[in-house]
Image (cartoon, rainbow, N blue to C red; front, side, top):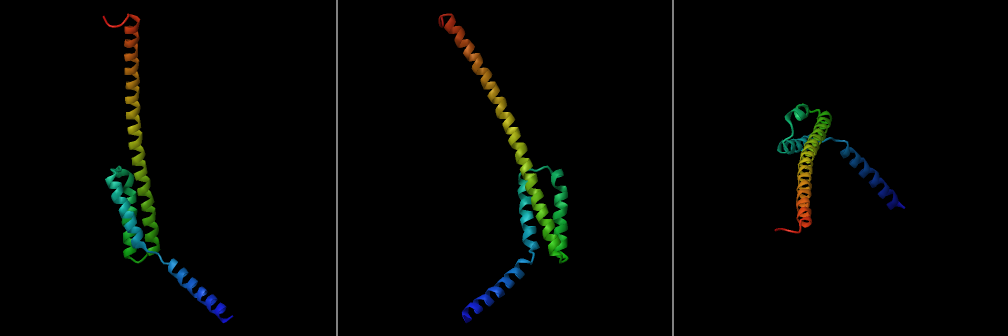
Length: 131
């Protein structure tokens, strides 16, 4: 019976410790995460206009972290990371649309070429073959 109370007490202590640790915010990791997405956005050649405000938010997050306001810094950094992801996704969407238009144009020209060749072949067959 004593072991039940011991385990229950240890469980309560462990839960209290874990919940205390979960409440702390690590702004540094959030800022690093956002900076990683900023690098990816720059490599993806996202329009600078799209991420100007995001860059400002990330700079503000760094300043807030330096001032010790970790919760606000982490929130801004996470928001920046999401905006970088959105900008990257939009850039990928634009690239995919451009590639799709290019492929459709090539397909249309291939279909036109096929029709021309088919009409030539039909004419040859109609005229009794090549002379």
